[in-house]
Amino acid sequence: MGNRLKPAPVFGKATRTITGGVELATNAETVIGADTTKVTTPANITAKMAAPGAIGGTTPGTGSFTDLAGTFKEYPPSIPIGWDLDGASPPDAEIVLINTFKIPVREFRGDTGNQDVYVPWRAVKDLTGGTIKFRVSGYVTNATAPADGETVIFTLAGSARAVSQNLNKAMGTAVSATFTADATYVQYDEWATGWSGDVTITDLAADMDVMLQLIRDQANDTYGQKIGVAWIEIEFTRTVSN
Image (cartoon, rainbow, N blue to C red; front, top):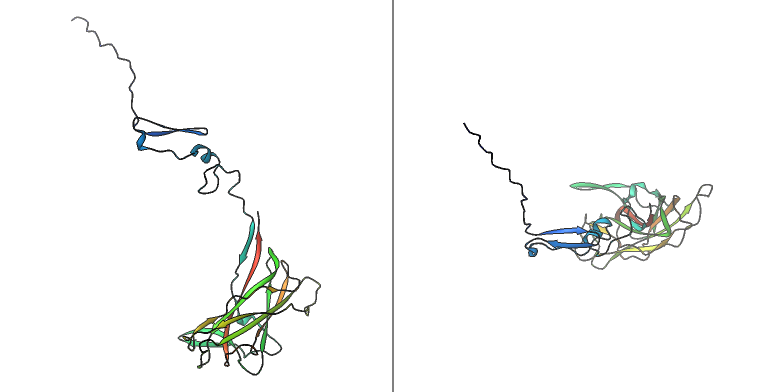
């Protein structure tokens, strides 16, 4: 049998045409391919991928996403009225208000003089500034609910003390917060004052003991019945940094 010649191998190069793509280079992006209408390239994408700036920005950033610093308003958990202490003329002792469900309240009277409680509070370690704001909330406990336009007013004052300072430090000027009823209120409805203006707490600073005095300003409000207080809320400012 004769020799059979094997076919010679064929060497060559296959080619493939890309339909459309984006070629990235430093500060330069190019749309390549046979159909460049199928892709687009965002402006400056390579540089932004290397050094991201602000979200939605069009130029690279120089900062770090781990940086966090600033001043923030803080609303800590509400202080329940059960944490208070009797003042010079205290309201009624705490009761549990029941209307299917239950909540503890203290009733502040609406006539024959103001009533007050003391509220201890500890300033946080990163508190800044010397003022706070407050509001008061609770439930209508009397069968005669406040009428449209009637008001309930509370005031708050306070002082702060550091180690070796006396508990009896004089308080700053009291500031008020007001609840104004509309025509819809009935017994067992929740009510709340608006937020007060700034309350200057004597010597307030971070990580200090604070004593607050909450008073129902019966002499100036217009609702003549007792009202149940359940919560005291405080707004303060704190500084957050790395």
